[in-house]
Length: 160
Image 1: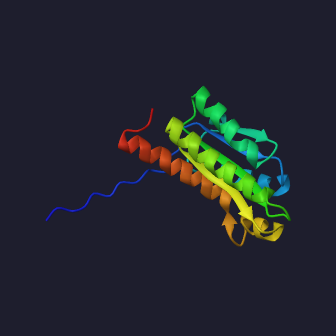
Image 2: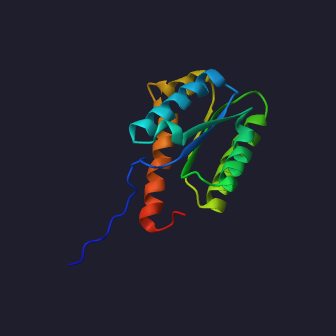
Protein backbone atom coordinates (compact mmCIF):
# COMPACT_ATOMS: atom_id res chain seq x y z
CA UNK A 1 0.00 0.00 0.00
CA UNK A 2 1.33 3.44 -0.92
CA UNK A 3 1.73 5.98 1.82
CA UNK A 4 0.47 9.49 1.41
CA UNK A 5 3.24 12.03 1.04
CA UNK A 6 3.31 14.88 3.55
CA UNK A 7 5.17 18.05 2.64
CA UNK A 8 5.95 20.94 4.94
CA UNK A 9 8.44 23.76 5.03
CA UNK A 10 11.63 23.67 7.07
CA UNK A 11 12.07 26.56 9.50
CA UNK A 12 15.69 27.22 8.62
CA UNK A 13 16.52 30.86 8.06
CA UNK A 14 20.16 30.34 7.18
CA UNK A 15 20.99 32.53 4.20
CA UNK A 16 17.46 33.96 4.07
CA UNK A 17 16.49 37.65 4.09
CA UNK A 18 13.43 38.99 5.91
CA UNK A 19 11.89 42.42 6.31
CA UNK A 20 9.29 43.36 8.89
CA UNK A 21 6.76 46.12 8.26
CA UNK A 22 5.62 47.50 11.60
CA UNK A 23 2.97 50.06 12.44
CA UNK A 24 3.88 52.93 14.76
CA UNK A 25 0.25 53.25 15.90
CA UNK A 26 -0.14 51.37 19.20
CA UNK A 27 3.64 51.41 19.07
CA UNK A 28 4.41 50.28 22.61
CA UNK A 29 2.67 46.97 22.00
CA UNK A 30 3.71 46.61 18.37
CA UNK A 31 7.33 46.96 19.49
CA UNK A 32 6.90 43.84 21.65
CA UNK A 33 5.74 42.00 18.53
CA UNK A 34 8.71 43.32 16.55
CA UNK A 35 11.05 42.05 19.27
CA UNK A 36 9.34 38.66 19.23
CA UNK A 37 9.52 38.40 15.44
CA UNK A 38 13.19 39.38 15.32
CA UNK A 39 14.09 36.98 18.12
CA UNK A 40 12.28 34.17 16.31
CA UNK A 41 14.03 34.81 13.02
CA UNK A 42 17.44 35.06 14.68
CA UNK A 43 16.82 31.84 16.63
CA UNK A 44 16.11 30.09 13.32
CA UNK A 45 19.35 31.20 11.69
CA UNK A 46 18.56 34.50 10.00
CA UNK A 47 21.67 36.70 10.25
CA UNK A 48 21.40 40.21 11.69
CA UNK A 49 22.52 41.71 8.38
CA UNK A 50 19.69 39.90 6.59
CA UNK A 51 16.97 41.60 8.67
CA UNK A 52 15.25 44.95 8.20
CA UNK A 53 12.41 46.73 9.96
CA UNK A 54 10.31 49.22 8.01
CA UNK A 55 8.10 51.58 10.03
CA UNK A 56 4.74 52.83 8.77
CA UNK A 57 2.19 55.13 10.43
CA UNK A 58 -0.57 52.57 10.93
CA UNK A 59 -1.99 49.21 9.86
CA UNK A 60 -3.67 50.72 6.80
CA UNK A 61 -0.24 51.62 5.38
CA UNK A 62 1.29 48.16 5.86
CA UNK A 63 0.25 46.72 2.45
CA UNK A 64 1.78 49.61 0.50
CA UNK A 65 5.14 49.16 2.23
CA UNK A 66 4.95 45.39 1.67
CA UNK A 67 4.23 46.01 -2.00
CA UNK A 68 7.28 48.27 -2.32
CA UNK A 69 9.52 45.68 -0.63
CA UNK A 70 8.14 42.83 -2.72
CA UNK A 71 8.51 44.78 -5.97
CA UNK A 72 12.09 45.73 -5.11
CA UNK A 73 12.95 42.06 -4.63
CA UNK A 74 15.73 40.53 -2.63
CA UNK A 75 13.56 39.36 0.28
CA UNK A 76 12.75 35.72 0.96
CA UNK A 77 9.86 36.62 3.26
CA UNK A 78 8.10 39.53 4.89
CA UNK A 79 6.24 39.99 8.16
CA UNK A 80 3.36 42.43 8.72
CA UNK A 81 2.98 43.69 12.30
CA UNK A 82 0.36 46.03 13.69
CA UNK A 83 -2.52 46.38 16.10
CA UNK A 84 -5.99 47.73 15.41
CA UNK A 85 -8.14 48.20 18.52
CA UNK A 86 -11.90 48.52 18.11
CA UNK A 87 -13.23 51.99 18.77
CA UNK A 88 -16.64 53.59 18.71
CA UNK A 89 -16.87 53.98 14.92
CA UNK A 90 -16.75 51.67 11.89
CA UNK A 91 -13.19 52.87 11.18
CA UNK A 92 -11.92 49.64 12.81
CA UNK A 93 -13.73 47.52 10.22
CA UNK A 94 -12.33 49.43 7.25
CA UNK A 95 -8.76 49.40 8.52
CA UNK A 96 -8.86 45.70 9.43
CA UNK A 97 -10.33 44.70 6.09
CA UNK A 98 -7.92 46.73 4.00
CA UNK A 99 -4.89 45.65 5.99
CA UNK A 100 -5.70 41.94 5.74
CA UNK A 101 -6.84 42.03 2.11
CA UNK A 102 -3.84 44.12 1.13
CA UNK A 103 -1.34 41.78 2.76
CA UNK A 104 -2.93 38.77 1.04
CA UNK A 105 -2.95 40.57 -2.32
CA UNK A 106 0.78 41.37 -2.12
CA UNK A 107 1.65 37.81 -1.10
CA UNK A 108 -0.27 36.28 -4.00
CA UNK A 109 0.87 38.83 -6.58
CA UNK A 110 4.54 38.33 -5.79
CA UNK A 111 4.36 34.68 -4.64
CA UNK A 112 6.13 35.86 -1.51
CA UNK A 113 5.45 34.54 1.99
CA UNK A 114 4.16 37.20 4.36
CA UNK A 115 3.56 36.41 8.00
CA UNK A 116 0.35 38.11 9.10
CA UNK A 117 0.77 39.64 12.53
CA UNK A 118 -1.85 42.37 12.46
CA UNK A 119 -3.92 42.00 15.61
CA UNK A 120 -7.55 43.08 15.60
CA UNK A 121 -8.77 43.29 19.17
CA UNK A 122 -11.62 44.77 21.15
CA UNK A 123 -9.36 46.48 23.69
CA UNK A 124 -5.77 47.11 24.71
CA UNK A 125 -5.85 44.30 27.27
CA UNK A 126 -6.55 41.72 24.56
CA UNK A 127 -3.74 43.16 22.45
CA UNK A 128 -1.26 43.10 25.35
CA UNK A 129 -2.10 39.45 26.05
CA UNK A 130 -0.97 38.64 22.49
CA UNK A 131 2.26 40.67 22.55
CA UNK A 132 4.22 38.47 24.92
CA UNK A 133 1.51 37.96 27.52
CA UNK A 134 -0.53 34.84 28.32
CA UNK A 135 -1.63 34.43 24.69
CA UNK A 136 1.96 34.34 23.42
CA UNK A 137 3.68 36.69 21.03
CA UNK A 138 1.85 36.93 17.73
CA UNK A 139 4.84 38.71 16.19
CA UNK A 140 6.97 35.63 16.77
CA UNK A 141 4.18 33.42 15.43
CA UNK A 142 3.87 35.53 12.26
CA UNK A 143 7.63 35.38 11.71
CA UNK A 144 7.65 31.61 12.18
CA UNK A 145 4.77 31.23 9.70
CA UNK A 146 6.65 33.30 7.11
CA UNK A 147 9.82 31.28 7.69
CA UNK A 148 7.96 27.99 7.31
CA UNK A 149 6.28 29.18 4.11
CA UNK A 150 9.65 30.23 2.65
CA UNK A 151 10.85 26.69 3.30
CA UNK A 152 7.68 25.18 1.86
CA UNK A 153 7.87 27.19 -1.36
CA UNK A 154 11.52 26.19 -1.75
CA UNK A 155 10.52 22.53 -1.32
CA UNK A 156 7.65 22.84 -3.79
CA UNK A 157 9.79 24.68 -6.31
CA UNK A 158 7.86 27.93 -5.97
CA UNK A 159 10.72 30.04 -4.67
CA UNK A 160 12.27 32.53 -7.04
